[in-house]
Amino acid sequence: MKFAKKEKKVLSTKSWNLLIVDDEEEVHTITKSVLKKFDYKNKGIIFHSAYCVDEALEILKNNKDIDVILLDVVMESDDAGLILVQKIREDLKNKDVRIILRTGQPGLYPPKDIIVDYDIDDYKEKTELTSAKLFITIISALKTREFILTIEKHNLELEERVKKEIEKNRKKDTQIVEQRRLAQMGEMISMIAHQWRQPLAAIGSTSSTINLKAMINKLDSKTAIELSNKISDFSQQLSSTIDDFSNFFRQHKQEEKTTLTNIITTTIDIIENRLTNQGITIETDLIDNDEIVTYASEIKQVVLNLLENSKEAILKHNQKHGCIKIKTYKVENHLCLNIEDNGNGIPQNIMSNIFDPYFSTKQEKTGTGLGLYMSKIIIEEHCNGVLTIQNTNHGAISTIKLPQNSKKG
Image 1: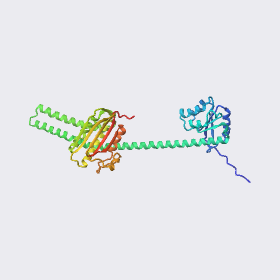
Image 2: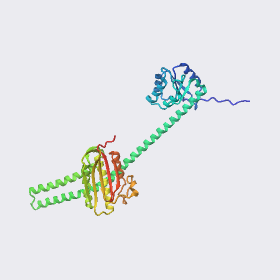
Image 3: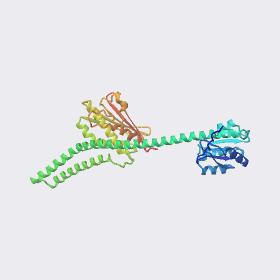
Image 4: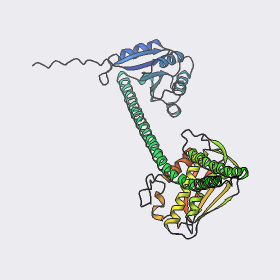
């Protein structure tokens, strides 16, 4: 009867790396002899030998692929092995290599205390480690090592995916910012046109007066100087308006010292005529004038957006006496700003969505749904503050809370 010839297994070119740390040469020889035919997942073992703590550390520093360490406890000192475990885990930050303590003097350090106090995989007495048990112990440690490396690989892949998603979201936020910027630019152009009508009409009227007086020879030097000064004042008003609006769209913004009073008054200058012409009054109670370090132009954008929202709410509900109240005050080391209107408030069924991107209650196509979303990002992410909106008995109140130094830590 013939038996099938058993094929000789060819080991992989890759191997497991085993570090033997023991001050007895005989232990190294026996361990290598027992494990010379070791095979797990078609991989053999490459042996590394160290006879003291310093030698073991040098090998571990130069070889990041050590999979398992067979470590004696008592070597150059009674606790040399335990010192090495601490150095591996804490100094080298190597949490992956599996460590098996084996000792000929188990009475010095009870296994229960060692397992609890040290990050090791197993604790064996040299006398109990027969060939079979040594095989099983090494394979068990390698399985743990594989599992840990697999988890780490998945974690790295997950971190990479998270980074990519964060980058996508950043790009998306950048696009949203640009969309909102374009929408605001359209609103600003409309405001500029409104702001310029009066001074342009005044310049035209003054110019006509100069022309008429010159034609009938009644343009004396005093009158000419007065009228030219008027034109100069109106021109300065136009220039100031351009400066106010252009500051809203500076690409490279920097934190600056300012006050909430300054932020509010310069923003009101932009929109007040527009509100007044629509029958809406602005009442201010700016009792706090402490300096604040923040992104002033961005906060102006937020204030302008909140004022626009209040205006829209008042007009939507046809309030005969529309009113927006602006108040500043201080709470501990924070400066606060309230913008309150009598526009009947926000319906409760949409209150939880008002800060969502692209959410808008405007029926016409002029609403982008980005105003409050971007306002919250500006206040909370750029300026390290808080933006909240809630209903009152007659309308809604928006509250901005800013630290006096808004730099993020």
